[in-house]
Length: 249
Ligand code: NAI
Image (cartoon, rainbow, N blue to C red; front, side):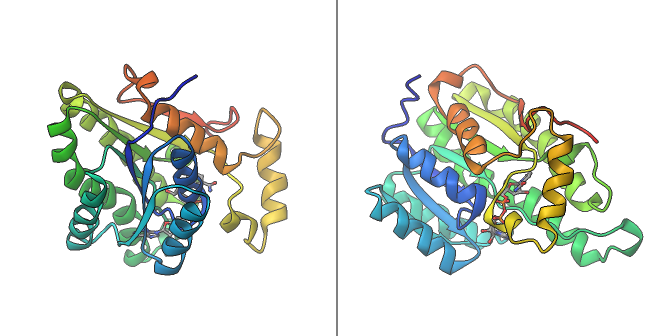
């Protein structure tokens, strides 16, 4: 299937590592010019450098997605490539704990990165997309939107992102812009592999996945690339679950 993404400009937040980094590579491999963005300067620059070494067009811009002025700077830097066609709202963190013990900071930081980040980045890039009458916004949600114990902040944020996706899809359809979400299940990113209890977690999670194995970042970036393409032009406001068949529980 020809995705026809050649020459498109893609901005991926949180693309210094994990799923975001792989999405940057996948979209670059499909011909996109990539704006790598992360709060972590080292990983952002490393990813962009690795992309360029592989022969792709990439720039790095350090940005905290919860800061309006940093998002404005990010979008203005992307003008160098002619403005953003594809926005992937990928930045996200976890700060797990049962609600009765959760600090206000743990609540605010998780929900802000997920929701305020998607709001600020989308608001900043949409005027350019509306002018071009073509655009893609892809929000990385999570299977946790169904509710995971110890993750009330994260589950609320990721479920909220689906509501955000549906509402924005209805606002933007008339401009040739689609807005969708991808909800990953357990994906084996370097961050996951480095968890001290990884092997226990892996065993428990694998047992719950109907297809019998855990996902890789490429499982997510393939879905993102499909949604970003013209092939998916009639898909908007939906959430694609990339979970190996696991939903709640
Ligand atoms: P990761 O931790 O490897 O990557 C997240 C990136 O976001 C990091 O590079 C981090 O520096 C960056 N970041 C954190 N705060 C930021 C901020 N304020 N502004 C800009 N960048 C910021 O995580 P991973 O696993 O690659 O996750 C990517 C997305 O996928 C997240 O939204 C996560 O919630 C979601 N997800 C991941 C799953 C998994 O199994 N790995 C499962 C379901 C969803």
